[in-house]
Structure formats: structure tokens, C-alpha cells
Length: 476
Image (cartoon, rainbow, N blue to C red; front, side):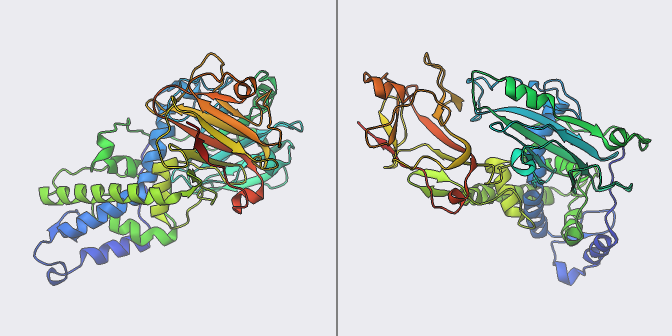
């Protein structure tokens, strides 16, 4: 498929003006770098590469984390193809790295909207069960959720419409119409596990989820087939330097620029960054290539610094309650979120906290003894449930133990409250001798550890800051 997407007229005009700059305006270091005659200085190349990297990094992160898995037939995708659900039927194994969780069962999908809209159908869900289908475009901007919170547990058909569709979409058959600028959409579905010993309700919900083209749903003729898209195999070394623009150009071809982005896209074209176009440094002076690499390195450093500002420190926890799932024109925020925690949930669906240290700022170690005391009446306020999961810091995996307990929380059977109604959780490697403490024990390996607190469907007071996680204290 020819994924070339021509620059809009306004962008071409901006590029032509840039190319017409005089020698006096650009200075002695001007270098012609494009067939159009655009001139650019070394400093301009560095700044433009920095800006283009910040703008384009989320597209690369999205491709690496999700889309490349489907293309490379990663087991996570369960053999699914484009426009198919990949339903994982079991909880993720404890030895899975990258801070995985065992609170929900995942359903993934990569949706290709280049040919026509897709219809996502969900079933009626009994009270006491829950799911959420989170979707994001190639820029990692989140789309409206389809979930038991938004559907009120009712069945419904939702049509997802991409940017190039010219047909008519009738509103009557659909519970919702979701439009998007992205032609490739990532779906991250989570079906909530209220009883880890019985996954049959989860399987019933997954079995009721379907995905089909609009033409098939309406029983009409389908549009002409699209040529298969061309995908560049992901290479982490290539994505770390100036060749990252190969991936950015590829992904920008699936995401038409908005009118307000015309000028910025025109400036990127001066260094060869353009939607759907091949990228190459062939023929560029070494000084320009070096400057572009310097700009990328500066962008990476700026993203690392900015990503640390996304979280607040509350009682020793890194805690985020703001909605950072949508970005508008804040491209630095978008890239920082893609670096730190790609596709964060809307806070009304899930809020997470994490800590590597105790309340005094000392690194958590499993051979120590820690307590998390939740006062009476102060359990995390949630509509679904809360969960505290422990991880080995050296592997980012959950801890496999004889008790078979990787997390503790609202679903854990047999927890014991103190006489005053409070709940104390014990985190340590050594098995407690006290029976009540053993009931509330979250086993830990020796060595450095960290814990993640997840609140599913938190109540509004959490986002308002009226409830915060209690400190994790060292007992000995």
C-alpha cells in the first residue's frame, strides 16, 4: 500500500515560505537539505529534530508496545489478526514481567479503520460483574470507554469511525458512535475478576464481545479492499537515534494531521519527517545528522525529567488522580505519559499508586517487616474493588510463593480486622507466627521489592483528594 499522505495546502505554503528564506535570515551555516530547496541551519536541524521527536515519540511507543506485537505474532495477541479480539482466558502468570496484574483478564485488539468503520458489540452483564474496553489512537489519545460504567451493564453496538470514511453511518441501530483521527486503534480490554477461583463469569462476558465491519453489521456491500499496510519491524537500536523517524513517518501516515498542526508538520518536513514518507539521512551533511541526533538526545532527557512531574507524592506513594489520558496540543505531556505509563486509565475507571520506599524514604526490602494500616471506615472507596500487589524489584514480576498470594485486598477471603475495626496488612518474607497476622500477610521475596495499589472504579472522593493511601511503615 502507498501510505503517502500529501501535506495540506497550508502546510505546503509554510514549507515554501521556509524554503524561500534568504541567506541573511539563515546565516552562513545554511545547508540545502531537500529537493524543494528548503534551507536549514545546524541549529534549526537540532531544534526541529527535538520537537519532532517529542511530537512523534508516542506514535513509536504505541507501535512498539502494542501494534508490533500483533504484527510479530506475539503470544499476547493469542493468534488474533487485525479487527479481531484476542481474549486471554486466564489470569496473567505471576512470573510475567513489567508490573503485570492479576486483577483482570485482558482482551486486546488492533483495529484497522482504513477500509470502513468497525462495530464493537458488548453483552448484557449481570450486576456484580464489570468490564472496561479502553481504546486509543496511534497518538495514544484515549477514546471514549465502552464499559459497564458507561453502558450501565446493558448490551449495545458501538460503531468506531475513522478519519477517511466517506459513507453514511445511521445513528438508529447504535448505542454510540465514536469518531477518531486514527486509522489504527489499540483496544485494551479488562474484565474484572471478583472471584479468582471462578473465571466462568469472565468467559461469558468475553464470549459476548464481538467485532465486525460496518458493512457486515448492516448487511450492505463492503467498500473496496485496502492494500495491506507496510510495517517496519521494530528495532530498539534504530528507534533510539535519528532512524526513529522511520517509525514516526510510518505511524503519522495512519493519523491525519489536524488543521492546527499544519505549520508544525511543515517545519518537520524540512528534516524529512512527513506522514507516510520514507525517511533517510542519505545525502544529508554529517553536521545536520549530528545535530538531529543531538536534538533527539535533548528530547529524551526532557521527557525523562517531565515524566517525573506527572505523579504526586502522598504518604510515600507515587499517586496520580488527574486525568492524563487525553492531551489536546500538550505534546510534551503526551510524550511523557507514553514514556512513563502509556495509556493510563481515566480516573473514574482506575487509579493506581506505587511505592519503592517506606514512609521514611528507605528502599523496601522483603527481609524487613512492613505494615500498612487502614483505619476503620477508611478502606479505599471503590465501586468495584481494590488490590495491593507486591513485586520483585529486580525482575518486575510478582512473587511466587507457597501461599499462592500475589496480592491482597477487597477480594481476599479471610482477612482479619483489628479490635478497633482497622485492617493491618503485613508485608515481609518471613511467615508471621501470629494467626491473625498470617491471615493478612502479603509474602515478599528477600531483596528489594515494590508494591502497587490499584483502585478499580474509584469513587469521586479519590480523584478529589479526599481519600489518600495510608503510609507503609517499617516495623523492625
